Length: 269
Image (cartoon, rainbow, N blue to C red; front, top):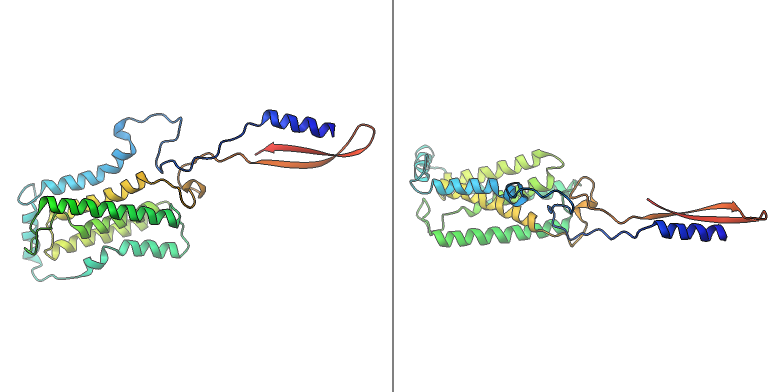
C-alpha cells in the first residue's frame, strides 16, 4: 500500500492535464505559434489568384475590348459552327458532382466527412448563386442570341467550375486525375455555352472565376463543428494536438515482511 501511495503521488506531480483539441479552428487556419506569413502569401490571397485572373481577363475582353474580344470570338464560332445545337451543357454543369458521389460510393474517403461536405456544398452554392445573380442584374448584358439581358457571367459555367473545384479539393490527396476530369467537363460546359450562342467569351471566363472563387471561400470559412474533424482522418487536415491519454499498469510486488502486493502505475502515452 505504501508503494502504491508513493507511485500515485509521483504520477500526479509529474502529469500536467492536457487541454482538449480545439476542433473549431478554421480548416486552413495557421496553427498557433507558427511564423506569421506576409499578406501576399496568405491563404485568402492564394485562393483568389486564379479566380481573379479569370474574372479580370473576362472583363478585359468584354464586348469589343481586348486582344481577342468576345464579339470577335463569337463571330468566329458562328462562322465555323453555324448549326451547332446541344443540351449537354444543361446536364454537364452537374456532372462533377456525379463523379464525386460515385467515387465516395465506392469507398474512397474525401477530405471531409459527409456532413461537412454537404455543408460546404450548400455554402458554395449559395455564395455562387448570389454573386452571379447580383452581377447579372448589375451588368444587364444582352446575350449573343438576343434572348435576354442576363448574359454576364455564365451561370452554367459557374456551376460547373464550382463543382469541379469541390471534386478537386476533396479528392486531390487520393489522385489528381479526379480533379483533371472534373475541370475537363467544366471547360466543355463553358465551350458549349459559346457554341450554343448563349454566352460571350467574357461570360464564360468570368463564370469560371466565380465558380472557383465561391468554392475556395466556402472552404476557407468553414468550421468543422459537425462530424469528424479532418485532423482525425489519416493524412487529411491540420495536425491538431489531441488530448494525452494515459495507461494504467498493474504488476505483482513483494511488500516488506515477505507479503505479496500489487503495484499500480500510470504512464502517459
